[in-house]
Length: 494
Ligand SMILES: *[C@@H]1O[C@H](CO)[C@@H](O)[C@H](O)[C@H]1NC(C)=O
Ligand SMILES: *[C@@H]1O[C@H](CO)[C@@H](O)[C@H](O)[C@H]1NC(C)=O
Ligand SMILES: *[C@@H]1O[C@H](CO)[C@@H](O)[C@H](O)[C@H]1NC(C)=O
Ligand SMILES: *[C@@H]1O[C@H](CO)[C@@H](O)[C@H](O)[C@H]1NC(C)=O
Ligand SMILES: *[C@@H]1O[C@H](CO)[C@@H](O)[C@H](O)[C@H]1NC(C)=O
Ligand SMILES: *[C@@H]1O[C@H](CO)[C@@H](O)[C@H](O)[C@H]1NC(C)=O
Image (cartoon, rainbow, N blue to C red; front, side):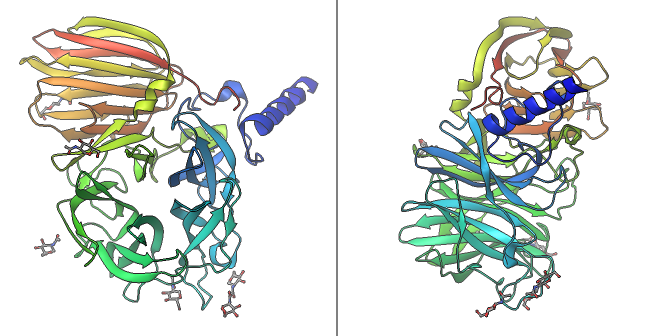
């Protein structure tokens, strides 16, 4: 009894003092029971998290905030959790930046973004109230909060800065993205009009007074969902990219397989007339857990994004450990022939602790490699004409078998977690295949051919899974395999 008490106090104090800026409200399970805890991803310190918010660079640090319920491992009571980093890969926790409680945000500080203006880091977020009983603002309204030190934020005294949706818009009105163009500030957010998702644009000279400009893009006749969440809009290689997360798309074969999607359109934009002409909507990721990507421009002008590595219908088995939810690794975005490419940012290499395996192997059937917990696995091969399937398996030897493979017969990539809910997407002719795989204790991110296609899913092995590489077909493949063990950024208190 005394021993147990002693252990508990030790853990509590060390977590509180060294690793977590916040007072722990939900207590994490004892160390030995934290088999799903991630090593190098941003995740809730404890409690629940979803969308990334306020991705920014201020006074030498990168900041990421996230939708966070510190009281439970389920959604609700939405705060903004906060982490910062010097290099985009080593993060540390800061105290929650936003706590609901003002009349206009008493039921949650919903998603938004951050900008730097003068000496301030300024957050823009949606205040949410369940009971629409104020004449001064609607149930979703837009607000700002300012900080001089990047740690403590003060809500603006004249919030909400945008109290009501546009006249023709519904009360679903959220997730402001703010940026500067020439002398003007712009704010874009998700809205709904007559069951059609859309994004609406505002303009300001001083960040406090906003003029409604109009609709920037819309699901005109409902073909692209009833609501668009978490828009992001930026220029990339002379084109404009709008990333958003539509709700209400019906599953269409292999497409739109998750409850909600995250994807993009690319086009040309003219500020003067708020005219955006764009092409078709494309999903950004084909795994089970990817939502609400938010981007920022780094000081060296790279466009980098992170997304929630989760989805509303997912199970979050880690909640039994006292936490739920994580973000993807940061990804650099490129446009190639109108297609958005996602590559792990180059700083990801800083996580490499040791080279565990580096060999050219011949694969003809199943080749066992090794057990892995947190690793980068780089697999390159030239495909031969008679190959039917090629891929890898992660087997925890206690019943979980995760299989990722190329099927040459129907020209698809497939992710099968053994749960009767596989994901797949098609490809064109392929001569080479390059797979860059990020495995963490309970997550899997696969980047194919330098980020042309990605699959992001949570997986829940009971113990470090055994990696095997396999092929089926009448030719043997020469496969270059490199495996790096990756650091646990949360292990050392920082
Ligand atoms: C609106 O209703 C909530 C919940 O009943 C209450 O706490 C709040 O004071 C009300 N606000 C106004 C402005 O009446
Ligand atoms: C609404 O605005 C009026 C006028 O500014 C103010 O007197 C009143 O207290 C406000 N009500 C709420 C619930 O904020
Ligand atoms: C809340 O009230 C405002 C002002 O009366 C109205 O425009 C808006 O549609 C209402 N929203 C909801 C969710 O009832
Ligand atoms: C809207 O619906 C019409 C007819 O149902 C269809 O022809 C048209 O392509 C749709 N527009 C868009 C943007 O999907
Ligand atoms: C895209 O933009 C980046 C950064 O400005 C530049 O380095 C790259 O060459 C451009 N690529 C193309 C295809 O224009
Ligand atoms: C590969 O595709 C073919 C054709 O759709 C299908 O019959 C077969 O089951 C697939 N194989 C696997 C392992 O998915």
